[in-house]
Length: 96
Image (cartoon, rainbow, N blue to C red):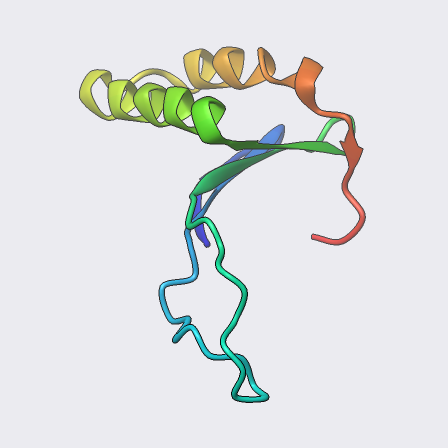
């Protein structure tokens, strides 16, 4: 887990695949195969809701992050972009 952004309105966290898994469960039986994927959690502090982006959504958001790294946007531009994801946020934040 890697915090990418934290402001008064939003938190963005990059959730990385668990690279330390050895493929063997605690009881020495092989672990069930898992799809190794990364994703992004965007928390809207104003509404207390979060959205988790994975798959193609995560890939599109990754492209946005790369563009931000190239173009050095203002905080307002970043917040406007994140505000566009608020409509997807349906899960209330329970513990953070």
